[in-house]
Length: 276
Image (cartoon, rainbow, N blue to C red; front, side, top):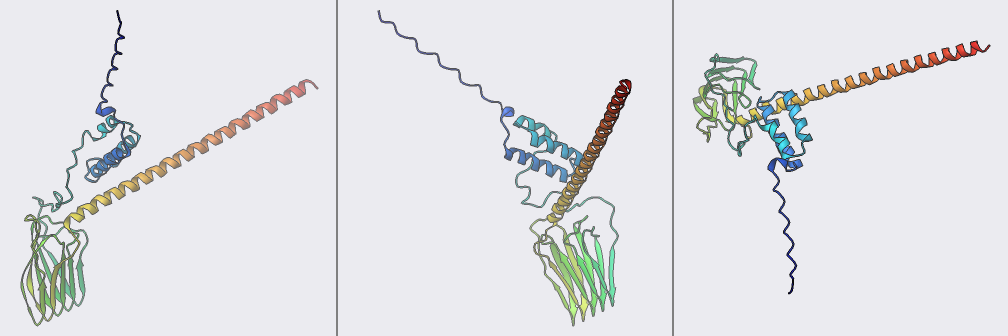
């Protein structure tokens, strides 16, 4: 009778690794850090919380250790940068801003930088110049009317590229030049320029490359810069604290060694005096 050798039992397949136990890569840590930076810029995290979570991110070994730092934050939306960011125009029921008057008589008047645009602006240039720059402005309302009057002077208006620009005016022995533009977004601000120029000029045009959403990006960058400066200051304070502790510790060691040497010298003197 021929005996057959039993076939060796198959080795059990290794149990699948849970997602939380998968080792995190540098790309995974950078992705989570980018989400935390976005949350800091949006005000969802304060600088201290951001610093604590960043420390956890770059010490994480597995995906499971990365999950808790994002648990209370919204998931990032794909393609959020392709359209104007939500809230970029900041329309709302806030208190109305009073009309603003810019008058230049044998002088110059300028309004630019980051400012809240009122619903009506009156610009008058008489042997002078008025400059209105809306490229970094915040629009609390959609409709903005600019009444421009130029008598032997000039009124110059600049608006963001993604804003609707319309005009109604004329020039009398002068120039009234408005480069009208219709924004692709129906909810974008609308700037209406009215007025006339007598032996003077009124000019309005979009500033190429300047978009309203860029303002929000700049605000986000400013907040991140402030956080970096805050982190740098805190790091400097921590380093100074460590240096002071080390100095105090060094002084304590020196004082302890001096006391020890004095006691040894005193004991040696007592022994020498005893044998004399």
